[in-house]
Length: 198
Length: 190
Image (cartoon, rainbow over all chains, first blue to last red; front, top):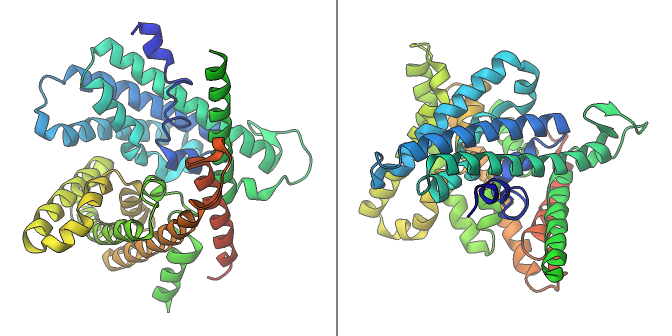
């Protein structure tokens, strides 16, 4: 597999959220606005990138039997770092993402990439894989958040361009489930079209 | 009275799955049949109660006195992972029947964000140990309620003809959205 392929496969073809349906909790919870979605996506990308690199470096040192707890400790370390950094420098983002920043630890995407990719591949490939998957996750969150923010509050990135209140239900919990479901269906539709053409 | 309100609030109003989006993975993953959903629910109830009890003790007696609360995330996730392993070993020894019923679900719970989520939530809400445990039990009951109802609906969904692109996860998510809308009816209960 070429380096470029490792980087870009997470964007669409193996998108962790929309195709593999991993990391569903944050994709529903923080997508009320595009700002939150970008913040969450970039924080997760940082964790994925760092944990993939470190785990790939340590893959020959960690005994096979205790690898999962060892991976979790590495991931939790970087989650704590990004948690403290966000609290220190972007307190507004920290309060709107709330408990979902520490919960990056249990995001199945991060542990999944550590187990499926970083523990078997070279350091540079793992770094690329982490960045690619992180960007794919960010893209997915941004798509869902764009739909929810426009429909729910008539704004984009906080700039209001549709007067009035918007459709409240899309900001609340039910809207999250429905938009997420429709986005996955749309991605499948596009994939089947692309597949058909080939 | 205060405690009753807290229980109703955690089970119906701020349902852990349908309002707080914690534990969506098992909610979508093991909700194919009512029995498996109930099994998963029981395992979550067991682990969540125990984990929150232990983590809130650690928070009160270790992390706060030593002023090392920045280690909270690492500490809690390790405690939960160790606890799940321990519960698995003990159950296997003393109650093989229960182990067989819950066995497959237990390892999944380590990466269930609901367990870590509730453990962190109770420290942010400044609950004492007893309140924390009660909150964990009622959150887990909310989890069971949501996942069992959802599994019941999905069993019926299997019998319906669904458009190809919507089969599986998309239709499940939209069903969950409608279920969440129904739960919003409880909003002003407390």
